[in-house]
Length: 363
Ligand SMILES: [Zn+2]
Image (cartoon, rainbow, N blue to C red; front, side, top):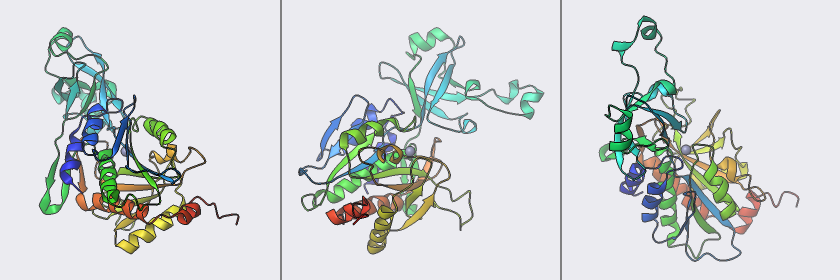
């Protein structure tokens, strides 16, 4: 895994609906594949040399990150915001953001809530927050200064202001948007691993980087119709849970290997695909952990419902504090996810695909 590549991809600006920079950054690392983008900011990277008639494997990861939008500009020069994606309000104040103006300029802002100095007794006693009570301060003193001097308009998108770093000694990645730039990096790494073997594969491989997952899996609704996969592998920067559950109950331990997701709110995994993937993981000594999520959803929820139904393998890279500004993940877990996907695809043959698709069930 090229950690520098992963870092560049996480740094790219790209909240839901505004993924252009993320599209360009990812495309820069996919030059040996056949690239195509669409009007929604979905990006397709096709393995060259595809043969007609071969089954298609779609590799999915969403490109968008959780962010915000300018909802209103107040008389005093502060900005009202709304969220693109789901975040916990109490995690937001006192963090900084980048706002992208319509002319493409970046403006720095501070997410603020009412300071303690101006709270009355009851406000101090129950410090509750709503998104409406938060502001973004860009250092302006009037509405006119916001629009005319800073060039900020309502509808402008914003993202967490965080720069990637890598601690080599501890194999620790720090940055923003690991949900789901981790998945984007895994698609690229998987396709790079398969590139030399592409003629020998039983399948055609298409990397589909999807827009707007965080606002309801919208991009994958389109990509799955375009790619028309027979099988799919979804990569996610999944929430690491090792600080919230006992060691026995933990299913998303950082440095615990790739997460194989058995179920969440959007998809019950095809057990035949899971069984095959775990056999592959054991054969190649790739660390994995199984997870049954009470909540959560991925693009598998959309992809699995297209065509004649698509078996999907959902692979997670355990990432701490996704849907907040700052994330940690381990390089080894990124590698485990990409390695497993590459070996799963390498090992596929027609008989295996028919079995996973249950075409032998009535025989
Ligand atoms: Zn995600």
